[in-house]
Length: 132
Image 1 (cartoon, helix red, strand yellow):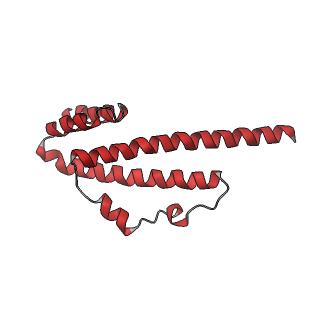
Image 2 (tube, one colour):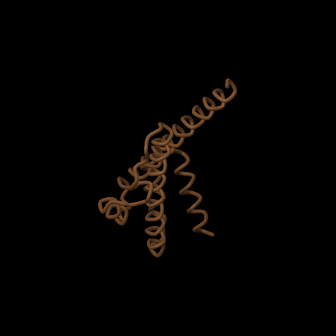
Image 3 (cartoon, rainbow, N blue to C red):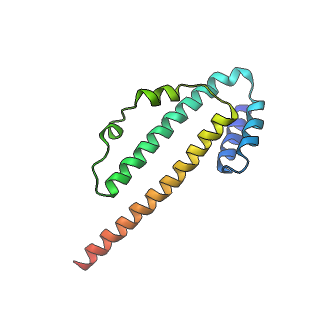
């Protein structure tokens, strides 16, 4: 039950955006029991993988929406050695977490931009189909 509350607090901090990220993350991390660190490490690792995959997916969809060929390594899910080494780090310092939060917020903006691009393209296609 306590883990569920802490997880809820984590997501509410993410939803608040970047305003109070540093102090909020420090306060949250100070309350985590030591025995939960392996679970936290696994969670951060999986979230890093998801972040990488979502960034790649946004890039692929943007390329296709612009009529370009997608980056094949992104399309096939091939990670560079540099990326996989970065994702396995267990750095939960406030600076590292702030950087990750910033990356997630940027991804949300990228997703919104992609949604707008696809919506505009769809509206244009619908308009073209109505005219012909």
